[in-house]
Length: 72
Figure 1 (cartoon, rainbow, N blue to C red):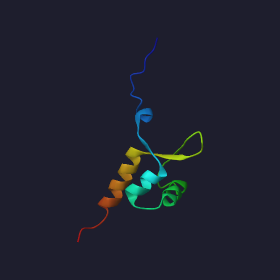
Figure 2 (figure 1 turned 90 degrees about the vertical axis):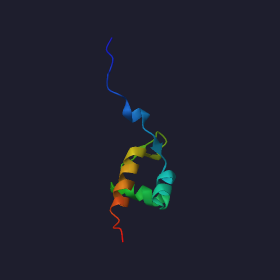
Figure 3 (figure 1 turned 135 degrees about the vertical axis):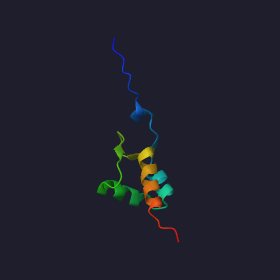
Figure 4 (figure 1 turned 90 degrees about the horizontal axis):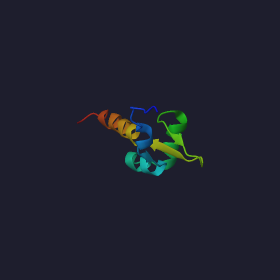
């Protein structure tokens, strides 16, 4: 019997709805959907066709965008 030593990160990763992502970025959920369609942020489709977003990817993008704002 063979066992895998690699952790199953993808199955353990928290997935966010467009509404949850929108709240983090303070935008409308439709904006998040447009970002996904444009390839700005990756998304996963559920069996029902709904979009879900990896929390780690969302947090990385949020950190990148908030770090780009110059301090006055």
